[in-house]
Image (cartoon, rainbow, N blue to C red; front, side):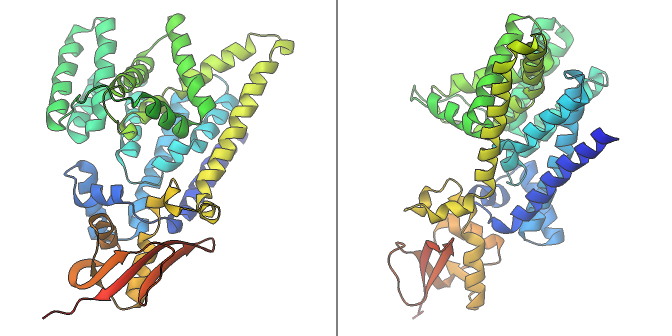
Length: 397
């Protein structure tokens, strides 16, 4: 009874925090691109929801939170294969929901939450049903989203080492279909994005968790205790690091593959901890405490990042700047009975979501923050101006 109550509390508090974050956010330019520019399953699905329930932040974000909740339950269930004690699984789940990358994926419209959910569903079914059913799921994934190409690649490599020749051919066909449909390309010349990729991974997982995750995958390889999850996660990690030498990557397609390796890392950590006598466990306790401490601080920073505007000289240096402004700007325009404007492309797409269409009747141009003009619109957070624009009516001849 107690484990179920703790599970309910972890997920309940998590979903509640996410729900109250909805009002703080605006649609970003990347999200607007998914809605209005992409030809994808994600775009079709969310445009259908918007047509039924209206264009608002709750229609956009509540389905993502709901899928995050299901993903968390799948993650908890999957971890049972690697962690025997329920207490360990609950600690791992708490770490999972606190990760900055998970918080982002649970609120932001991107391919990350879809790929993560798809991966967890695949692993969950792979542990419980025959490959006949999971092969059908892989077929669906090949047509659904390009982010699943690395799942197909990881399963292909696993089948090669397992000498499962029938599935090797099947996976090759699906991988070719996915690569063709989503134009997966390797391009560029050596340009030094490797460190940038490491930095982004560290921000998504927090540095200590990311370093230990990579270490655990390496330890699993040395101990020859590798399974399908290891192949999927390691393939995506190595592939992303190799590609980063030549091109800038969309990490949202790769990070979910490391998320699924967290149970492997937890298993390695707990085994290393418990095989030692109590007097020799101090180092592992320190790592555990520091990991949760830094993760907790990182999580607070993500949740209350709006307060950072009060200490930044240039608000555009804020890491989540693109997740603000648009909704508040649209409200100000509606108050002035302005229902349409002409402005820069990215802001135009964002304002469209809040009912401000494109027209030639009004012009909206962003101003330097330290300048002010009559009829200007000012957006402020934490008592500091973060955006200012000049609205003027265009006189037609």
